[in-house]
Length: 227
Ligand SMILES: *Cc1c(COP(=O)(O)O)cnc(C)c1O
Image 1 (tube, rainbow, N blue to C red):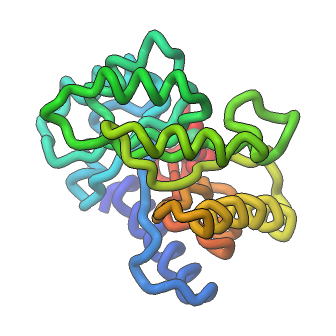
Image 2 (cartoon, helix red, strand yellow):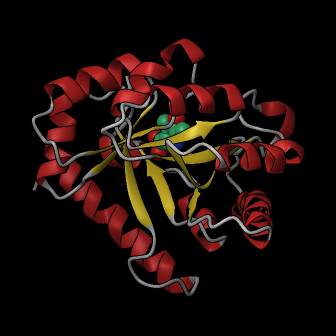
């Protein structure tokens, strides 16, 4: 079996083990394969091994991959920082956008989405490690942003996304993810119907699942190091 398929199999069994360990339903945690900086051939291989959802960080790279891919069944998630002059391209191809952190970008996506396309699923990116990241909405500004976005009919608010500062200690990873989970639960208590907690990467996936992540974004552990 080729490396990418073997890696996918390993990741899926890691996910299943973590679901079991932390008492989540088997199959409840979804895998997003993050293919940024990897060639279309790598995506094709992963697709041939059953992977359908792919995450990309750069608009032009995602566009090029969408154009060359004959696999209409693929599911495209945009997960990178968004410049407002790029929203039109994202609105035309992305099924999901995980990196919404301001209203202006959400409004542009909403207005530019072609009418024939289904509502774009949205996660709000939360800046959970404070100073260390420039992307993401401050937790204090999350509720008002969510309330505005809820009214945009071209978008469907699905959940929260976070990229914590790099950390190797499991308990510390978990403590940060716990903060995101609390924000997610708070919003649902306020009447939102969020169903997606997008957190966990190659290096902190288990800690994220321990805190309720149900969509993990994995690049390196599937495709190898990025060049
Ligand atoms: C690159 C990236 C990932 C994947 O990270 P790995 O450590 O390679 O698994 C996940 N999420 C986002 C937002 C990324 O930019």
